[in-house]
Image (cartoon, rainbow, N blue to C red; front, side, top):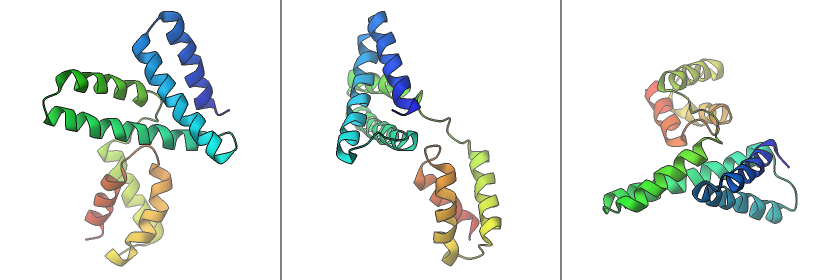
Length: 148
């Protein structure tokens, strides 16, 4: 079992003890997704794989939150915002704009990229460095900006 999955299990026990039904339901949902992925792969997941699952769940909630806000469903939006907070505490701290810009500039120098044709090479080197800490679309936009 990965450290992150163990942390989820410990937090689930704490939520049970504290009778925090909302947190408990969110953690149970996350653990369910992890267990489903483990059954599909027939092996225990690594922390990086668990982070992928958590990132996917976070993205789903963000999209649902935007839709609920767009249609004026305030109660559902508040619940989703709380779920986002709970899920986010298990993910690595996101990169700031400045950190991301620095990382993109360093990677472009490292790969000696000069034109838009080198975009794929830069992204292939950069994405593992930003995995779970920055949105791919944001990284892509910055790389395009730097390569212009």
